[in-house]
Amino acid sequence: MRVIQISTCLFLLFPLARATVAEQALGINVRDFGAKGDGKSDDTVAFQQAMDQCSASGGGIVSVPTGKYLIKTHLTIPKSVTLEGVWRAPATVDQYHDPKDPKGGPELSGSVLLAIEGAGEEKGTPFLRLSFNSTLKGVTIFYPEQTKTNPPVAYPWTVQSAGADNCAIVDVLMVNPYQAVDFGSIVAGRHYIRNLYAQPLRRGLYVDLCLDIGRIENIHFWPFWTAADENSPVAKFMLEQGEAFIFGRSDWEYVTNCFAISYNVGMRFVRGIGTGPYEGAGNYLLTQSGADMCNTAVLVEETQGHSGVSFSNSQIFGDVVIRPTNNGMVRFTGCGFFGSVDGARGTALAKIAGTGRVSFSNCHFYCIHPESRKSDTMIHVESGRVAINGCVFINSRNTAGVNSNPVPIVLEPEVRSAVITGNEFYGKARIVNKAKGRVVIANNVEETDEDPDPAKPGKEPQ
Image (cartoon, rainbow, N blue to C red):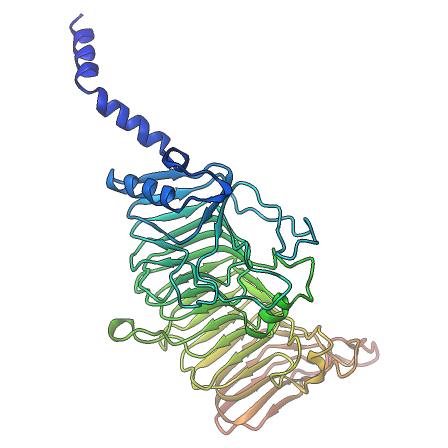
């Protein structure tokens, strides 16, 4: 009897506490603050009020039910708030829906945010800012006034850090952002992105000013919006000016399952914009990632000198360019290279310069695109250090196509060191060595694509 009385007293004394727990479990709904989701009414104020109240109450989830929510200006997700739509994986679009619509009106469902502010202002206010411990989750973002029939109109960044750590993006589709995610112009340490699909028109993801480990997983930059019209002005613009990933200063950035197709530059590594502790370039570890059909698939302008950049188990279709400004390490392990898309950078696969060391281990090289075969050299090392070990060069005189068998490796006089050992060449090895530095070329096997002569012993390795 005493236990029952105590329980009853607790219930009578703390009814408000019980209600608060229930409300937190259910979260806050933007519709309760007046959001219409009809694609016509301006829902900006309703969204911001819902998120601000959630933050003032200690944080939590602000739910966005199915609908098309017009946001005429911009939003800030406050501290400890998650703005969450209905998706539990990134959505996609039916790009073939209503092909006569000049604005490309794709069929969009779920929790859709319509962004319209900032046309013509590349450096304007971002559509959405993330604060400390804030998350954008389960939504689709679409720019309805961006058209496919003309070259893209510039817009500000879609999502940007507000100068805080622990910003996160999860299960999001950005259909046609001009610039998708900026975790570089302002500090965004320990950022986290998982499952982001997007067709950024000018810039995809920019990382910089990160002194604590960033993690990005399952980013897919693909023509969700224009796949049905690959000859559109938008697709042309992306091949001429688009940059999918831009990596500046970040310490221990983990990049997993990230992909980009049909950009001018797939992955670009640059010196950061910061000074003092933020000065310098980055340290990036990339696995199961790559760039497909990009003019320059990997562009290294600078990496962190003592750590550098490491690719593993990745696929790369497009030029690999290491600029003379680089003095850090660039490593490729267990990667596949498919050559240049157009041969416009002077090689069929890679151009290497700088004072840093570039290494290829257990990789395979095959120039598959007819345009890449117009170049005379696959890997052209102009300066610096290079190591090519245990790799396979597939092109040979038996490869179909005109000029389909470029010289595999050329070392220019400014090369400081080269270690080229244990490789297999389907054709002739043809390693052109003009280097004045220290070079080891040994134990390579050539002409393995030729039918063996049973009357002759195997050829001795070089």
